[in-house]
Every structure is written in C-alpha cells, then in structure tokens.
Image (cartoon, rainbow, N blue to C red; front, side):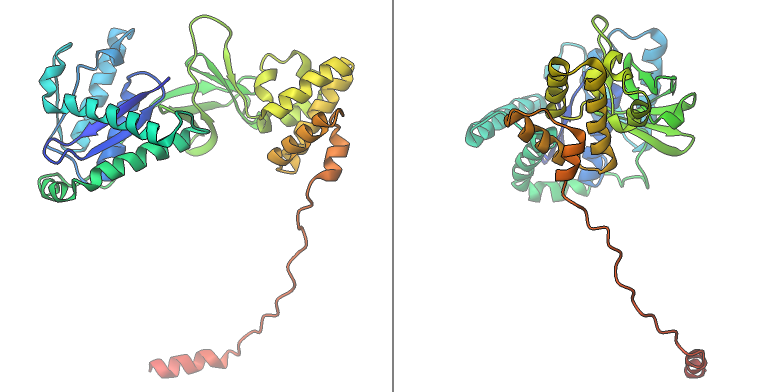
Length: 348
C-alpha cells in the first residue's frame, strides 16, 4: 500500500511523481517537493497544497506547531509563498485536480501495456513511474522552456527534508524509532545516535559520522513489535553465543533471505536445539565473513532440493574462490634530479 506525491506546474503542466510509503507527513512532502524542484531546476512563486489535514492527524498541539514552523522555513528557503485550499474543497485547486485523474488513468494504461501490476523491487516500480512521467513531460518541452523563465533560481543547497530524533543503542545492539527496533553494530552499545527519519529510510549518526542505514518500517499500536535487523550487526555476538539464536526476540528478522529461513526450519525439525543453533549461526557467519550472501543462499537451496541438510563447512568448500593474489610488482624508475633543473631553466 502506498501513495503518490504529484507535483504539477500550472502553465506547462510539467509534472513530477514520487512514491510515498507512509501516510501524509512533513517528511514525505519536503523530500518529494525538493526532488521535484531540483529535477525542474527552479522554484515557482507559489506552492499550493491541499489542507494537509491527514498530515496533522493524531498530533499534539506542539507537534502541529512544529510542523507548521518547519514547513514555513522550508518554503522560505526556496523563496516561495505557501497557500492551501480549504479542507474538503478540492475544486479550489482548479485544473490541477483533474490532472491527478489524468495521471491515474495514464498509470493504469501503462500497467495494462506492461501486462502485469507486479514489480520485483520498489526501485523497479519507481523506474516505471519515472519513465512514464518522462514520456509525458517530453510533449511539454516548449511550454516548460517558457515557464522556466518565470521560476526563481534554486538556492545553493537543499534544506532539511527529514525528522530528527535521538535514540540510545541498547545492550541488545539496537535502538527504537517510532516503536520500531533497528539493529546497530555492537560497538555502538550505550551511544546516543542522531537519527534522520525519511519517508522510506532512516540514517543514524554518531556525532557527524554516519554509522547505520535501514529501510524504514512503520510500527503499529497493537501487536508484536517490528524488528529491522541487519545480521552483519549481530553475527559476532551470535558467534560467541550461538544458543542465543533460539530465544532471540528478533530471530526471524535476522535471516536475510528466504533460503536461510528454510534452513532454520529444517534444522529445528532434524537437529537438536544446540546443533540447530550452531549450524545456523555458522551459515550466517560464512555469508558475512566471505561477503557471499546470495551465493550461500543458492547453495542452501541446492542442498535442500537434493534432500540434504545444509552444513556450514560443506557450503564453504563450494563457495567460489576469490582471487586474493597480489598484483605483480611494477618497477618504478626514479627520475634524475637534474630533470627538475631542466624544467626550471625552461621556465626562465
């Protein structure tokens, strides 16, 4: 489930579309609006939105005031005036509202021609939308050249398009952001991280140093807590205590691919708990140490299809050997110092 951010210029109808994974928010608006302006190469005099009531839903008075101030600072950074239509009065957006309908129709038609609504990755879906919009904008070249003359020049840099929170890394090697648990390298345990929250990702910093990236997930008020785990962050701790895998609250989030989950299911059925943990941690450590996660997944699948239990030691024997030979020595001839005297003489 997702939404689309749609930016349209009034005269030329030049448009920009961005995928919004969460609901309406300042982060989604600011990030996608900036992408539109920098793709366009200028900023209009006025930026008009709907009432943005969904973005303010369930927020406290202080949070609403904070978003209002941040949005005001945002449009001021680009020298734009901000205006909104009244809640429930979509007709106040004029012809732009019908443009949203035309876009939806164009997407439906493009999907029919494509023959499928399914995309393997989010990036593939984004490329599909970008190519569609590029074809639509191509027919507006003459009008956009006229409208560009009326746009303001962009500032030297982008402005803030994320929400920042501070979170401490717990002894379980992770930190909480909006009720979602994200893993972090064990060396950061006890440290306070500045976390930048974007619509589709989070970026964490220790001081000014970037230390962690994750795809963003949305927590729910009810139900089990969501865990986003990068097994590279926790594998060394598991290597020291493999048995911890069995009772780990984020065990199922550790496995990077479905093949690893299948292996764990088989280990639980066929092996003792001790051996199951040891084998699973051994396979994860192999994928981490040799940087061959995809290849190990392929080997796991091959073993399972052959009716055999995957074994870390046997998998290691079948991994493609990387070329670790050092390059041959390259002779370096030191130039005579007299050459530099010649250069100085020529300069004189």
